[in-house]
Length: 122
Image (cartoon, rainbow, N blue to C red; front, side, top):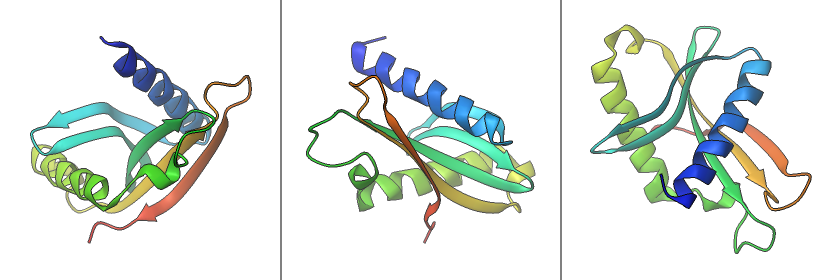
């Protein structure tokens, strides 16, 4: 695992722990297909939640939340479609796309911002 992947895995674990503490059930992490990757797939009650985790250092050009552009959202939506084809038990579930954005990761106190329903799947 390269350094960037290791950092990504660290912040995905950080986000997963936060979501679990808020009562969400983690179903999958790091789901990969040819269409893209889903960082975290979880359940919030009966709602299937796809969570994108973004982390940025102090001084980055954009915040972690701002770094999710239209192309990235489309890859997440496409990977979600693939996930639902592979896991038909969730096909008819309500679906929500969240973002866990972590900024100032190079400090002693990174800030976590969990944005529920950050974008839609259209």
